[in-house]
Image (cartoon, rainbow, N blue to C red; front, top):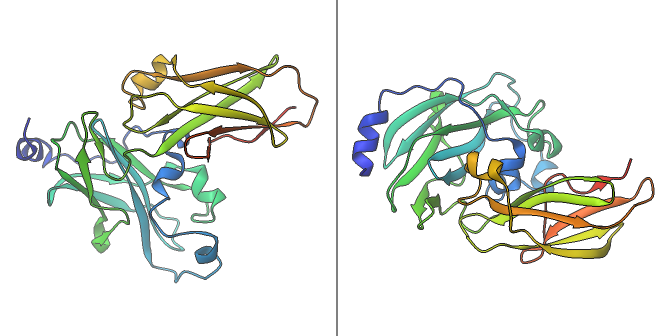
Length: 249
């Protein structure tokens, strides 16, 4: 399907509440390009300022977050492909990471929806509709054989799922890369194991988070004392997984 056909197909679609990616699906890849770090957060942002990030596009799905600073009312986000509007959706999905980073009082400012397959080279953009304010990170250019965008290609992503009975588990990947990554497990800051995240996870495939689902990991690290902190890090990028560190109850 060419890009223009897709645009015509979606031109009249208005999405008010779309099924969302969980926080574990998107984590910090959406915040990496927005220039909002500790230094910026220390400076007051003028109330009424439109702000947000186009997280990216992957296998038909687009996501991000948007807000008007100081206003709890969710905003509508307009998604465009090659300059043509194809969807309008409400940015009211929960995002705990926005609260953690001091970017939103409740975190209910995320958005995600399925816009279907796009051809390589298609440009995906997003705007706070009533202000016609472009979100940071856009436009994202679709590229690669796995149908991901320039905003997400190669980004580390994953989740430390939990610890029980001496075992730790989770999943990890580099977006759009078929090769499995190594995950280093640390306890109280000391490395205890390094595992390859190549175990099958049907849920990752079903949620479009990995093109085969083979990105899970599990490691036996033995019984830990109460209060021990378990961390998990993608070795190639030294990137900490979402959910880490977790504390042994």
